[in-house]
Length: 58
Image (tube, rainbow, N blue to C red):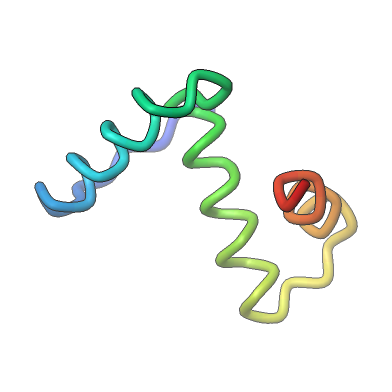
């Protein structure tokens, strides 16, 4: 799946800085984790979303 969106320059630069300083993360894993976090914290009860959220905590 391909997702395109515009984000502010500040968010983009902070994402790039985070990824550069954390080699286990890629842009895709960062975005996937961010979406799962947002969905879970806003009431999504899907098991896959919950599992992704919990995996990324540890």
